[in-house]
Length: 329
Image 1 (cartoon, rainbow, N blue to C red):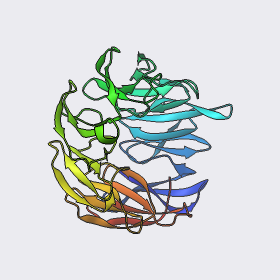
Image 2: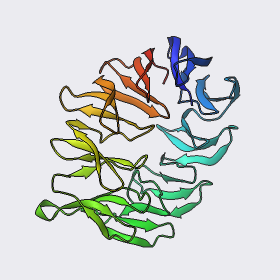
Image 3: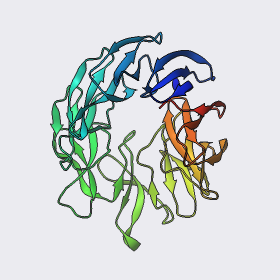
Image 4: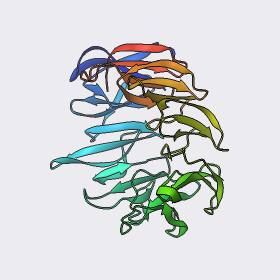
């Protein structure tokens, strides 16, 4: 995987280079902007439309899309302008619409399934890779299919409690949790109840408690990644494995990130700055940045200036700074 940077020029007309994990530019291309990283294919903006590049870095075709995100699992989430907004679908590497651009929003594409809604105020439904609806109006936004189950809630439940639905629509576990992660190796991290009755811990695929944690454990990241999850404990946070063991803890917050390549972007409480931490709690990149721009493959991009959007710092998972300069995304 390669990461796009701006070698020269401004948005609308720039020379985009693609960095490898050692900081070397493998190739460059002239374009208006980049849409995302390079993983065998990449999308750039050319003459106002999405153009797809080959593995050699040559622009091979222009598509009918006008914006794109990806590639993710060999596809681009792409959009076409419609009235005052965009309609989204899935575009393949040959520039063909695998799924017609008809959705108001399309998220959580994992190579097999995606969630989407047709209207701004509509409910999300679950679709397969060809755009066939599998599960209508499952309500919860942003959940991935894992172990043939999806985290879902009931629109009529004002408490927003969550459970797990099978792909045929039946409930594996009826909604009772205030938060729940997708299952990984038969385990989900959940919270249930409020006040003194509140519980946090790990359940099995039938909803049985495997572990219940001390009251100081207040919440978890949205998903387990690389068998590790971020845990919020009020004044401190930590990283925990699937067995419920804390790998490290401290006065920092990993809640907006996930572990990729053994590291996670993390906000330090003191100073409110982001850095890059490994799962033992060691800083690979010291916390001195305002925001995290992107985390993909072996790259994490930070923004140093809270106001300026043109300058980024790109690091690899080892903590080496690969680029400190203009952004192409």
